[in-house]
Image (tube, rainbow, N blue to C red; front, side, top):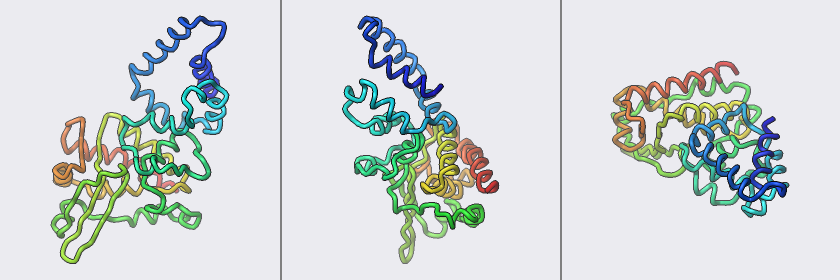
Length: 264
């Protein structure tokens, strides 16, 4: 049914000789207005793992429609540009590099995940041997909270690269932790849920979001931690509901996070 609906949209956009140009224009205008009315919700629905369509099917439908000639670019490149207004932000250097995964993409959520994570080599791929005890490895994962790190001469700086990245440099007297900002929107829970869900199902593509979330959850354990990283521009709560809401968000997403590893 999903494939059929997608094909109908593409077919309608491409036009039908039996319809007048005015009628096709009206149909497209109505469809466009419906999408724009609640576009964030529509985009979130497109990223839900239960709504994913095999990407080779999407490519086949696109290739056999008039849209491929109209846009003159690959469908995966078009898909990448559809979510520029959603956080986490796009890793621009990775996307502009032009080196797409050699094995292609599984589906739209895979594309979204790929555009939001650091370049390969900055995180370890989850190999078969690592899969034996993932729960134990992450249970042993420990980073002190932000205020404790500050007391131990660690300073913090906002890292403006990919939205899923952390850099740590240890000097002789002090240390510096650079962390990409955490932007909270009404849709943030759903986005992180889907990204973590993707890594749960396809660990061979790495666990960068899982590791990053574990780091953020360790750093932000108290209101004082949130206030500290807010001053550094690392935590940005666009909903303006206070430090407690940031902690609640981490706690809620953490339910899924720990359920995943406890169930393996």
